[in-house]
Image (cartoon, rainbow, N blue to C red; front, side, top):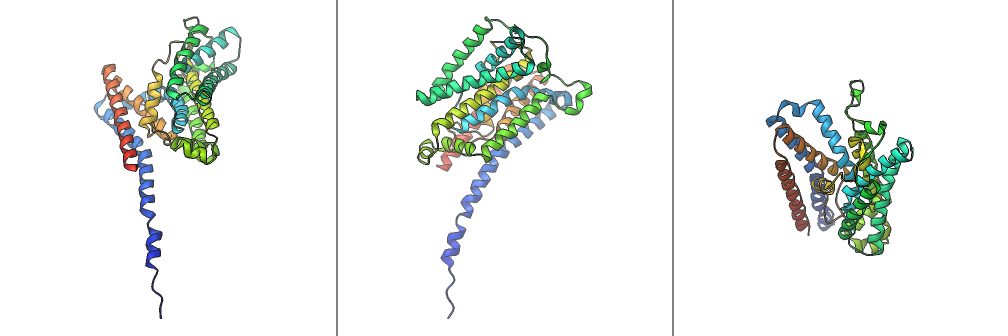
Length: 340
């Protein structure tokens, strides 16, 4: 007598397939959505804009403009995945430009040392924000809002409320237009530096213990703590890492301005946060990707370049960018409501 087929076992084993499929589909949609959006915006401006928009020179300009926001967005991505936020980005960038120019002018430091000094200034600012958040138990929004004012004031004090002129060095070539003999590089070395660091950050988030802990803290801090994740140390690490990338963005800004300007990068934090959100990052934490953040930064640069090429006013760029941010946040909230 043959035994009955274990139909209940086959059904039970097949049940997780559908949820896993939709989870993977949602993940891929979250990554590919910004890329498809970037492609659509670029094609739109290529069709309705002047021929100069799609020229190689304009593409290089877009890449140069994206490098500053993209460098800062790498740090903000790590912070927002961990469930935090940092409003001091613009002030830290300004302080880094001032620190680099001051070191070049007053201390006789080499360009490499001056560049490291600007990045170190960003690391220190991020470390202080992390200490205040973890030790004083103050919400990141308030801490970084205060740091935004403090750091801007320090930058103005160091520069005596004026720009600091610096001697010409190779730092000014990081984001300079490529000369004809270096056209094979396609984009300036500063852009390649941001790309290389983006790959390192993506690898850190995906393959290291720290990366797993960052996602765990952002997804559910209490659960992560119960699982043995050192939440305070993770938060301290992400704000320090973020500050370092803000300092790197300051180096890129110095390369573009060639002076230390304590009034530079006002409002840059909005562009950086917008890049992460447009790229699929969540204000609730636990979600985000390096690729998405860079694509978000590219989307804003393409919009600005397209509007400028078409002779449109600045307010048009602001309205379009703001509308994209609102739609991105609304879609993120809708996705979380469905998941709940």
